[in-house]
Image (cartoon, rainbow, N blue to C red; front, side, top):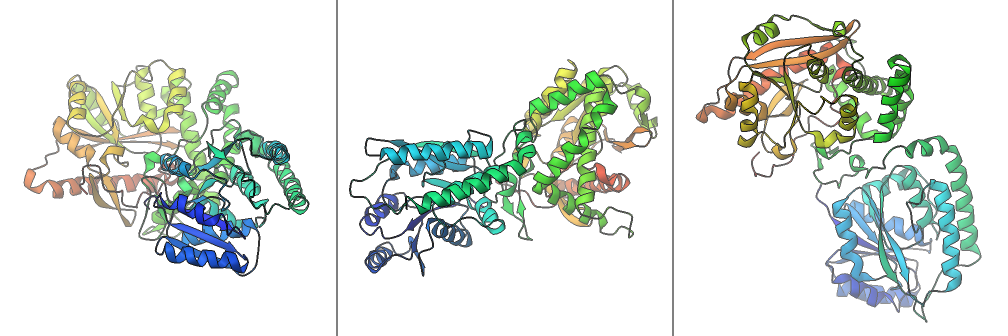
Length: 583
């Protein structure tokens, strides 16, 4: 879904200020949603005139009775979401906020669509001192409730919400409807791992300005809200402390407005895999590596269970992707032969992924014996290495593709170079590199599979190296170059790059899968093509045939090890049109 922003203005009896506020906002050419929170007759007349003046640009919503600022804002956010907008900029009607800063909020949201963009007030001498000092008391409570200083100002009425994120929270949690709304929604979004960005913005107080802040009752409501939030913080304390070791994410997986995101044919959010933020911190991964070194792999492996449980609970997108995969896996399979979609299968799926990463660390640390890794049938591999020829080896995010490269660095197998898109996992790769200085030596990072990439690889193949790439992901700059194949009962997009590259290199092509089994890792190495030819006139048909042949073998091994295919995104959704304009 394309980024689409609007402005939401809650109003209650600000008839003298709203005209100028709307005029200052209208210059930015954004749709306006003005929510009348049960205003008096004179204000209603002014709003009706504005609706006529800005017809087609201003939507007027009218609440029958005054429900409070929170009620008006929530009504506006829901209306904006129903109208198809992805983001809503909330701004007060009284003219205190600097409307010239609107483009800065929009630019910040476009740069990080999953983040909540907050205004951080810069006051002049017009600010009432009692209001200024009172705000800081609330700020301190918010910092306690979040165990963080991230939310610099929780009361500023100038802020921008990702609508998918805000509306999901409003649907699940009963939020307050008065002045305490602005505070509580931010704290609860923080608890849900939202990212926040702050923008300094000028705030002025008019001498004759109208304030609807009830010094007694609104302070009572805010105090009651803080009491509720403090108890909520205490209940969430273990998770909030765990968050301190992990970077906050911009909730891209949950925001339909993320760049690269689209809606598939079933109305579900689909997102380019490389835009999904890498989860887990460098510190947390390094601590596991240190534990492995000090206490051994068996003891450290016990930590994987609570870690996986945490990611299971907080990673809704990965859970849904796992369930989607198991639903496809069950198509055409005998009843009872495949895992059923659900929390248990998702947990086992994520645990297998964590164990795979743990084993990669063990392999690069020299803690995996050669005897733990065996070929199912070594004939094809031995024949290739005996010939001294190089080859292109196509693997997948199935099992542990890294295992053989680690053993190759230790001299156990032939020269192996991994062709990777490392932008997506730099933290984890840095931990592996710290475990073994050979990690980066045979690692070739690419952005696509164009002519320049082929030239880089030709020399390596001529020197007898095995270039290992994956065929079940589309590089970020190759999204237009896909071909469709039947995979697990449905049509899925597969990259053309591996077959185009094989054609350019003119070398033999093999398939490789490394699955974890009861007695260790089992390597499956099988011939795929002596040479791939792509005649110009029949190029599309040949690409489709090679992709289908690969998909058949990938499906075979997915059924053989159902928990070991680690593509935690909607694999069957069509990628967006590529930069080259082709599909």
